[in-house]
Structures are given as structure tokens and as C-alpha cells.
Image (cartoon, rainbow, N blue to C red):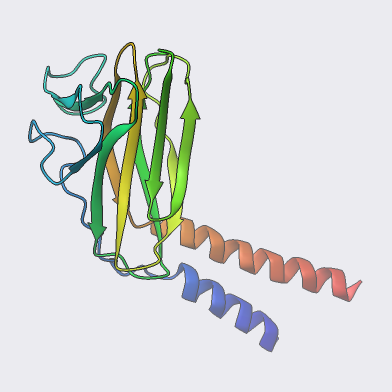
Length: 188
């Protein structure tokens, strides 16, 4: 019975009441300032900018989005995300829209981790990938790199957040299930 109490205690410790974790700081992830405030341009910044046409096909959320069309070489933006806790996990999401032009490429990098790297992506509406990353320090660079010789790609709704407590609760429930499953198997 001590094993059951330990497993249940562990599950409630992991899944118990979540304390509000401090959120990391990312400035102007939706480009709603109408410019690249908080971001630094990198590489070929020709044909990169922010537009604010209001809701529409090139804006995922809010009124503004960033556009990128460097010709011949990559260009993009980077920002140091602060307020991270070394070793903790974070969720990075963003909305990205390719136009199908060739040659083109897109990549997103967090610290030294390449999240996505695509060459000549097909045209589509906004894609909204999500990544779980582990911070290796209290500040990490989040970078987006583009090349789109014949047109433009769009970026919007960039966020870095602490994973939701519900994910931790699910993990705790799984640990209890694993314990009881192993215990039942051992008793047979």
C-alpha cells in the first residue's frame, strides 16, 4: 500500500494546484505597433516590413503582420526572449504564410535549436506550428529567416508561453495509470 500512496502522492505533486509561473517576455509578437519594435533585422532586410491593413488574408490575428521578401539571400528578424528559467519547457507558436514562390526558404530558430527549416514551401493559408523547447539560459534568441525572390511570406502571432498546467495534470494521471498497470501485471 505504501507504493500506491507514493504513486498517488507523486501524481498529485505533479498535477496538483499549479502556481502561476512567470511568463517569458517577448515584445511585439503580433507586430501591432506597426513596425519591428522589439525585433532586430538580420541579413538581407530589403523588402521586409510590417503592414497594418486590418483583418484579411495576410493578417492572422489583430490588424498587422510582418512581411518578408528578401531576394537572393536570407533576411529576417531576431529577438532575445527574456524571463526564462534554465531547464524549464516553453511553448513557441507563430502563424506563417508562404506564397509558393521559388526560390524561397523559411526557418525558425530558438537559441541553438532549429524549430523548422523549409525550402520552396508550397503556397498555403497561415500555418500555425507549435514547438516545445527547453531553455538553456535565462535569455534565448528567437530568430526567423526568410528568402522569397518572387513574392512575400507573412509572419504573425509569435508567442512564447509556459505550457498549460493541464498538460502537467495529464502527465500525473498517466503516472498513476502506469503504476497501477505495472502493479496489476506483477500480481498475475
